[in-house]
Image (cartoon, rainbow, N blue to C red):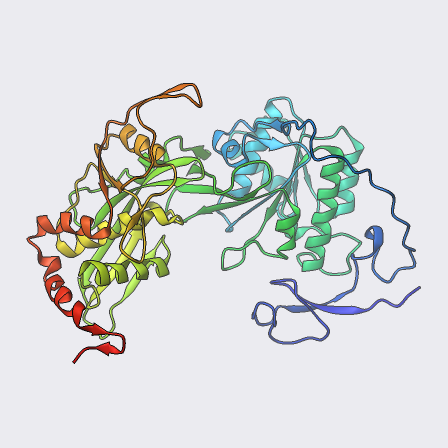
Length: 497
């Protein structure tokens, strides 16, 4: 038998090195390198270095690119928000990875989905590697799901789990909670290590593809919010879902970051209650429920999360600083993008914010990622500096360029229709957004309803600043004339003397 060697693997990023070191060269983390026996990487799943000889490959038939393409068969979970994120339900033979902070509600969501499917007549298996059977039963009883015919097991051995699944009828859904607790005999390392997680996930995904069952893997997250273990597991599965939320708030957001059978960046919104997770059919009302439209520094952003339009309140506070360097604090948005908006306001619009502290917050704890929020952020900043409240019935969206221009964004009409549905009467949008006109869409053969909002189109950020400045008596533009006088005196080498 060939001699087996050892290697040193980083438990944070999966980098392999020839010797132990205190700091990983791949990710920079300290004390994450662990010695592991070289196993799980041999041919056919045999450990590397074993006496198993490599077989000759078989000829794979090649087919044409054209042909009949069928829609992937799905199983609806019965939970509308979960089905929205997955693209219409669980796809048979697929593997999903669900990550989230401890206690955020991953197990609660999955046991609710398992109970719904089992009550609908599907065979569902729930395998817990972290909790005993009694603990899972207590959760089901608290949620009122103890009568659901869900097959339950508490096991961590991959070989025992696969043998149990193959002994009976093929289930429609298998939930593994969690992948970091499993271990397989093909890898000589502790559960939770990179080798064990990768090898265990590969065995379960291979069985899912062969049997046609849907496998949902629960994954822990690291302190920076990423799923723990090797990133190759995220590439192996068909969909990656993140369950986000804040312990101080009741709502939870299920976000799709990868989906081979549906749209990415789709979200589902839930509210945590004593009876489990409750679907939020209208998230805009949730995020705008406690809004005070009479305060300066607040603006409503008409955004898009996947295919869903959302109205979110953006709050800004601009105050004179008492320090040598002004502070910039951001919650729920990109700090680098805030710095860009502040620079454009100063350079293109004459709004001086260098001697002011700036605080920006996205109400409700949601994180905004699309650049269409630039215009709403700028409106909130100028409103706070001027001390003038924006119209309570208006929404804002548009991308701001470095030249100060306001550029169109996608899904223009969907944003406006959501604002109109929630009672807003005005919108400030980019000019030439290319929205649908009222009338009939000949390409789709349907009637396009008219939008009843008063839409104010602007070409540059200075147009928005001028509107707000008109209500502030021009206080925020007190140095704009000075800036215009100094501009012709600039030269290529610096300021003209």
